[in-house]
Image (cartoon, rainbow, N blue to C red; front, side, top):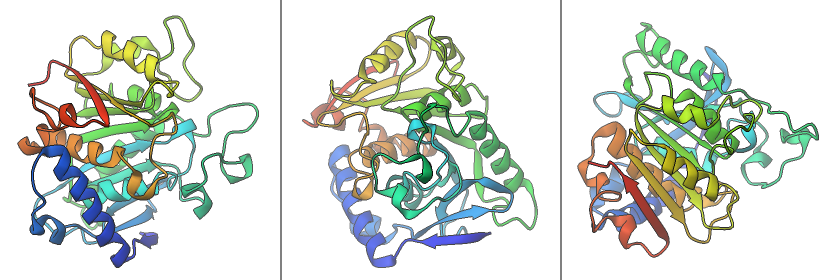
Length: 311
């Protein structure tokens, strides 16, 4: 273990309070004080066994009984920068997850600048991806091995039976390819969607419309409104996913960049926490955000929601 980047405690608690308030509104419930008291301090770190990735996790892996579900993340533009979505991923980890992001930790500027120059880790003029979808599989393999290795900091701490793959834009297509792995429980795509039939996959993703048939777990397709260029692609994927539970969610007022660089990860953060709590932890209260005629997102003027085959 090394290169640890703790979230400052005061900053962390304030952010947790704000996120939990948003989440409580989404679930149509009140915010109990105990939920704030149990918010976890987290670190962003790199592990010698997986130097190509960045890990966000609770600072003390022994702070709660049981095992931590695993979330694997791929960046927008398929960037190879593990701290690109730090504001967002830190909040996910703080709710009791070990998050593994594609790419090592880059310069702090990548966490707040919308358009990165090639020298900062952004895409070059050739538009080739800096990462590959198989890096998500590398993360799954590492989690399994670390969890099974005595003496490893993660030994017997990870819940490798409950795994999510998530990504944004180009990274959403990387997550789609990885979702065919039988170890994956759920897929979440933000600002993403496959290209029309007959199109070649985006570089580094391996994903086409045919990839949708390989998905075996519940799917959340989340975009911005009509200003998000991926919105129509996600609509098409929603129609093509015919065998698994699917949520198609639109955040009004959000463009293709999503909300990941905003403080606390913006409006996508409570959505992600509720979905992961339902799919990976079996939280029936979290399910209320998505399921039922009076679901939280159904009542939220900032969202529109369509669903298929939800329990």
